[in-house]
Image 1 (tube, rainbow, N blue to C red):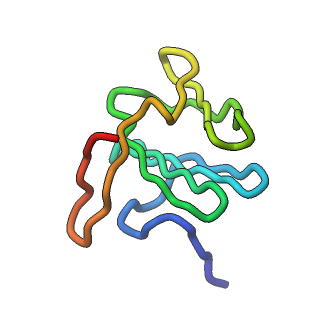
Image 2 (tube, helix red, strand yellow):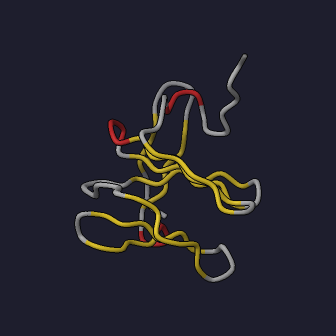
Amino acid sequence: MSTTTWWPRELGVPTQSGIWGLSRFAYFPAMHLLAVQRVGRLTIYDTAGLEFRGAVSWRNDGADFVFLTQLGEQSVNRLRTCELTSVSIEHGDI
């Protein structure tokens, strides 16, 4: 039986993942990355020094994903996005 993943293979295996309706997430702590797919559109976020501790909610009709960290609730809209290349992951500004 094969397992299909929706995140890029180079991210590896997430420690946490989940789904709400048409949106889903996967967290990759070794790479400090959070993958979020909303209605088919994938965005990779740099979690920097934040420790992802779990999903809190999707807000504003799914436009904002809020998660719990060691500093409290955080919105992905406040994180930097990353571009994937065939060789590495480039951390860049939003």
